[in-house]
Image (cartoon, rainbow, N blue to C red; front, side, top):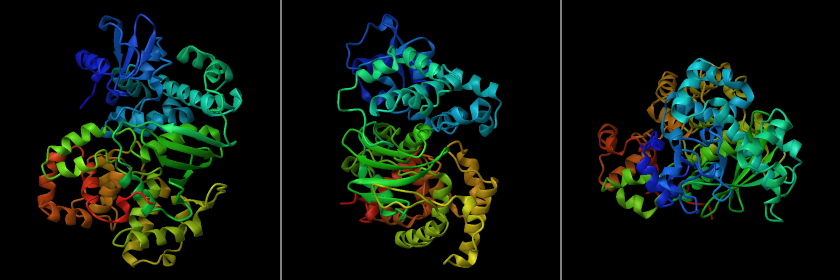
Length: 493
């Protein structure tokens, strides 16, 4: 666990000297003599130890008056894996800030969603990250602005608006302060022929910590894709996105050192949220070395990890959608679950345009499904009740599934619903809520894999054995599932 790693000077110095990219995003190096901050893997000759100060976030560096290094571009490193593996207030707040809540609802809105006062929240974030929610959101706006300046030919006024700035003047001041260049100066640095592209479509590179095994990640998303909402086309997983200001289409293509991401948005203000949700769905902020090292300690898992290291947990861009699909998939095949979902999409989804492919709809919202006639669902009566109860709770707000959800509390609320057993609650905790320790001991594929590998196959005995895999049991599930020849485990050809 690297919590508060920036306070361990020796360890930070070792990471900087060895230019270890695994620690990018864990901490930042602020250089007193130059006033610049870098990622640990910066290619420049490291400064003297006495000239380095280590900070927990880019926002803390910016607040202390440091500017981003032009060589290593520290603001583009993958996010800290801590926000994915922790369930406390700071981690939940960071997930919401990444999802753009401060820009849309302000700090009071952020605090209200977490059930704390704005003062308590400010105090906790400052104590751990050296910056409050406004500074953290500002650092994110600056990063979005730079991305748009460098990858599009959009006018600066549009970029300022899209990145979440309230005025062009604030946008100009922030960019100058963070990057020591004007917005125009940043654009001039882009090699000719790089900026631009189709109007409305943005092409970005999403960084990750290596290794990343795309097989089960994209295999899962493609094999379970709901027609009209998702598709696999020309080596990319494509899907529609329901976003705060509008909608969009994301196309994600695995490359050896990044994920190529093409976004078409109806409202550019949704860019930071769209990026954040794509990163979450592909689990790109994970620390695969920490996960794999822990799982390798088990002699049964070691060969599976060595054969295909860097497996990620395939997640979702919409927690409520995933929960609804999990219920549709109870006790039926992948193909049957897709058929059920496709019917709902055609009947209740919102139509969207897709000039580059065959996507037709947004997945229906819980509100749109709350009025449907249960008799129209081709499933047993008890499952209909499970479905209508879940949709009703999501629609009236008495059950909320989001990036900020408290994992144990939400799992307990799900288990209280009719027809929700441990498998459904845990698959939602794992793939929708992002709990890295969610485990599925009753899953058929897991029990089959366990039997073949000589692990105990009864749920209780397997759970006892899996205690050694904590806090990464959701990743152990991916390695165990991957022993099977099911299409979810393979990149589509």
